[in-house]
Image (tube, rainbow, N blue to C red; front, side):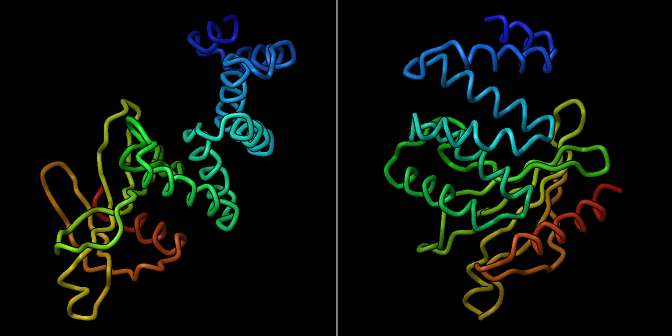
Length: 212
C-alpha cells in the first residue's frame, strides 16, 4: 500500500523502493507478489533500466502464464533493444491466446509492442492480430500513435492491407496516415515479411511530412 501511495503521488523512485521491499516480504503465491513484480518491471522500464525490468516480467509470467500484459511489456523491452528474435516467442503466445479467446479489454484486438520518443512526442506502436483477408476487406495491421503531452493522439500512421495491390502483384501493405479527418497515402508499400526497422524509419518520415 505504501508503494501504491507513492505511485499515486508520482514519486516513482520511492514507489520502486517500496515495491522491492514488499517483494522480499510477500509470499510468492499471493496476488500482491504478482502486483509487486509487475510494478517493478513497469517502473524500471520507465526509468530505462530494461536489464532490471526484464527479469521481473519473466518471473511474473513463470508464476502466472496468463498475465498477457507482461508478455507485451517483454516484447517492448526486446524491441527497444532490437532483439527481435527474443520477442518472437512472446508475440506467438499472444497470437495463440487471441485464437483461444483468452485476451480481454484493450488487448483483445491488438497489443503494444514498441514505445519511443520523437521530437518531444510519445509514439506507441501497436500490432493487430488480424492476418490476411478472405473477403477483400482493407484493415490496419500496425499502428503508430503520435501522442502529445496532453495524451491526445495528434497523428496516426498505419500499415493498411490492400487486397487490390495484392491482386495486382504489388505490396501487401500500404503505409498511410490519418491526421484529424484527413487520410494520406504517400505510396509506400511493404510485403508481409517487412523488417520493423524499415517500417519504423518510413513511419518517422511520415511524422516529419505530416506534423509540419
